[in-house]
Length: 296
Length: 322
Image 1 (cartoon, rainbow over the protein chains, first blue to last red):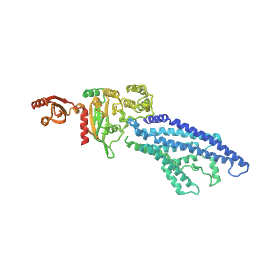
Image 2 (cartoon, one colour; image 1 turned 120 degrees about the vertical axis):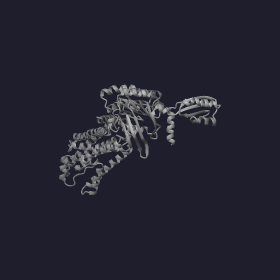
Image 3 (tube, rainbow over the protein chains, first blue to last red; image 1 turned 180 degrees about the vertical axis):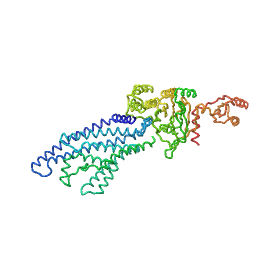
Image 4 (cartoon, chains in turn brown, yellow; image 1 turned 60 degrees about the horizontal axis):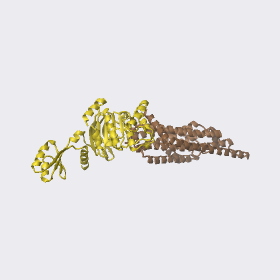
């Protein structure tokens, strides 16, 4: 199985290039920062609410208010995780093929009885595995922190993590495709621009969805999401953070409800989810087709 | 060197030399946009032969080799390696390759790189464990396998490349300028390695612009220039295609040149020495008698065996001028 040989080699490369060590050190710092920030903000909010209620202020009941604060903090923390994971996915994808072509290191490798399909799939699998582990560990650490500090129970943590992994695979797929057809630097620029565009598309779509709603903006957001369904998948993930009780409280309070910055209070559309699943597969297929035609 | 003998011996040892040639190309062509790197390359390399592919830089040698490895897609024509198109991964199972620029993943150690390639080539764990230290020693990298390739000198990297090329005991080895980074001792070692491979019945396809190297080890050569084969054949035939006589006289004037032209074609005149292209060396005694009879003093009449370099320069020069 030469595909697995390539995957194994790719993991060795990640270790040798100190990617894992650097990634883990920085990520640990991120988790610690989140834990400290979350604990401080949560307890401060708790004190304020207690004193406000003592003065007889009206509004949401204290537990719902606290739940809302926790949710916003968790979504922001996970937003940070997905941002790091996305950048990591882009960098890994961009660096996956074209630098090896440019340096000529691929000549000896592809002269072996190894098909270009096996090579690309092996690269993708190893990098996707790394990114999955990263997302699982990081988001797991964040959710665990929230649980310990505030007893926080997200709506569906498995879906949150699964969608975040899907998002990273979308970016890995498209940057790996870029890596087979573009020089490294050009690919990096294109991928960052594309990601920025998707982010902006998400914001536009979000603003368009705020009541009374702006159909044109919502559609524009959807169109951009089709180009790169990264932000849309993240928003889908963020929806699954929301605890059911909060959603119930939201529906009780009527139209206004609440808005999540960088997140979503509505689930991902099934069609968008299907598109996001098909997207990395399509990118890989295109990458294989392009790479097969490429002269080295 | 005895090309026929070594070819026969190789065939006997290899058992692979049946009817299927190691390499067969017909009308092979590669164009990058409007630039044609390879025109109509047709050649056959029987199994067990050491074949020299000679040409100046940019003649299309590397392109041809890359097509034979499936790294480059030909624009036209056909290439077969042991009867199979090289784009099929399985066709490359019996092939070893040393790339021209011998660049490898620099973050890995030499031993790791050999292990990776051993796995890709389908060697089992026990085989790799035995073969890798043996190969490192064979190419002069004993005890250096644990160092990262980044720390290797150019020569060491090329040696590692040679080890990678012969790692899985291939039946065909393609070497693209295999001694470009080596010192004279290293070059000699590579020649020995090529002879050893030939002795074991391995077909060797050697790209080089170093003529002495090719002369020393190859059974047959093809000279390629600007993407075309301008000459090919056994080395002795190529070298013997044109015969020259070097005539040393006391003086050179018009009359003697006219006399010489009667027997061949004057290739050049250097002082009182005239180099004459002739069809046969048998005319030397008659020529000597005529020169002396005409009153010239003859200091020497020497048959000149043309070196591969002369042939090369002549042929490549012709193509460039043409």
